[in-house]
Image 1 (cartoon, helix red, strand yellow):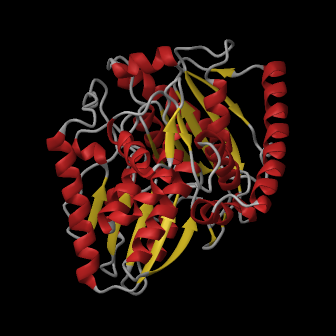
Image 2 (image 1 turned 90 degrees about the vertical axis):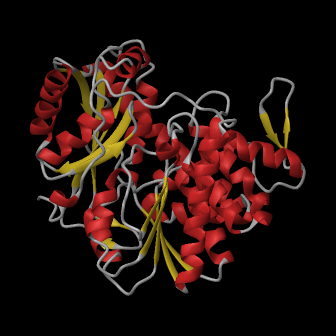
Length: 426
């Protein structure tokens, strides 16, 4: 199966040697002011449009759920009704469908940045499109497309801003009283390792002012007072498992509800059961890898989970790859690739033409430094390009990306990826 719209599904390709802007930090007032102006312009466009319906498409992990909740809160604050669809990937068939009906507001939370041209080309109903994202992207010149990605203002999407922070800043632009939801941005930002920097400092500072968080003696952030969420890291873990492991069982809906209303007992119990499922699946996968090893090619090392994660979204293989990238038996200068089979079902939307292979790529720290120095191509370039050669697509960050392609094309994908590393590095 090939995607009918694959020719429209462009990926963001950063050329080898092209480096991201250095971390500007929150104190770079010019860049911050420029970004906040974009948020204000988007709000004004929405208000002036008079639209009363909105669809929010969002990713299936903690950052995606938190940003979707924040977007929902902000948009409903403007008197617009919302409907949410959770996606593991931004499938072209879904885009064509949702952008082809009666004109409305369509919001993309924690996805969309890597496919700006696709969103523009399929916007037949002249919808207002708002992208709240932090993945690698390109500028849009279409006045109907508001690509609210801080990377376009000199911030790093890998270090300075999560999608939840972007959505929070948009919500605060809509109504300053929504500062009470700053903890959601803090939860969504936990996927970014290390101490908060850049724009991710903003919700922490706001939450400190409202008394929602306090600093521990070690400097860590702790929720305080009547905040209806567990610790940032625990809340993130719960949302990740609800969104990915529970993807086909209403998990994302429970996660968004938890973000808005609090983590009720039923949600905590559901998450606990899903965590046990994931733990067992990861153990099976690790035992298989320890027994058989990773398959090796010149530039890449890979495994195929096949049906090991059956019933879960493709996000779980990416999470497993992230964990695996820190293991000693993994070659630190080869790209790590993980694959799994995913069904054609998209909950809340319908069926894709056929089953797919979800692929995730990660770079261990030594390889990440080589990528940063321009000595190796970014994962966000080579993985999407390799998927596209087979009628699929992909997107992501410099050192972590994912994509999909038709079942049965695994060997062709791996050969294309391995060859692309060689030619890109030449």
